[in-house]
Each structure stands twice: as C-alpha cells, then as structure tokens.
Length: 189
Image (cartoon, rainbow, N blue to C red):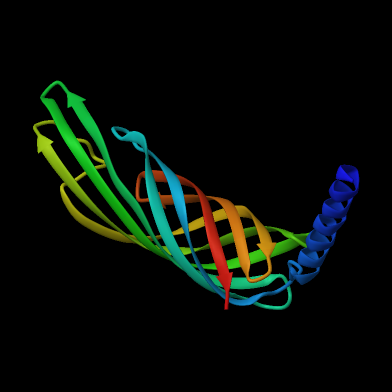
C-alpha cells in the first residue's frame, strides 16, 4: 500500500515536471523585457581598491536573429580609500553611477539556457569627496562626468516569461576600473 502511494506520487510528480517544461518558452527571441540585478562591484584605482554591493535596472528588446539592444542605469555605490604621501593622508569617497546603451548578442544553448554578450557606450557621473592634505592625480574633489565604452557577458536561464541571469561587466571611468558580477531577474513583456 505504502509502495503504491509512493509510486503514484512519483508518477504525478513526473507528469507535473514534464507539463511545466512544456510551458517554458525556448531561448529564442523574446521581444521587450525589463529587469533588475544586484551586483558585487570591485573598483581598482591607485588609492581605492575595494568591493561594494551595487544595483542596476535595465530594459531592452531582442530581435529574432540573435541580436538585441539594452539600456540600463547602474548605481555602483560609494567606495572609500586613503591617499598617503609625504605630505600626509587624505580620505577619498568615490560615488559612481552610469547610464548605458548596448548592443547584445546571444546564443541559445538548449531550450532553457542562453549565453550572451554585450558591448556599448555609457555616460557616467562620479562624486569625489577628499578630506586631508595628500593628493593623487586620479582623484579631484567634486563632480565629474564622461562617456566611455563598456562590455560584458552572461548566462541566462529562461523559465517562460521569467529569466534568471548571472553576468560580468567591465567599466572604465577615466582612470578607474570597475568590474561588476551580477545576479538578476528579467521579465519578458
């Protein structure tokens, strides 16, 4: 009796899993989408070398033939460091944000997984606060703006209109390198 109940539950579970997999859309073009991600951003500059949690929001469109476009807003958070020289030391507060526009390319790997890459241009803004007497040519107090290219790659797991993604992106804001590793969610509209 107990073995019969376990067998029925196993068969019912298998039917539910197979039926669920049949409802999942393949990793083909998905049209308009939007999403968000939490990131672990690492900054590498002469006096600031640390990591911070950051976040981003994005929206885009995937065309039928492996290409797409994406726009995003990224807040890297505030990084802190210390400049030390013969003249003393200075605390550095570095706050960075960027808006991006990218061309994306994707390769479906089976019905549920997509490998993708992106490359584009970003407009960035930084706020630098300095407290102390030492100086560094990479950091000047105040607000700075600029635009530079960026790139990245990732892996996306598609579950119908919902996708879960893991990606890496490389940003360069003048003399400051930022690498971001993200985990996010994307919803197809």
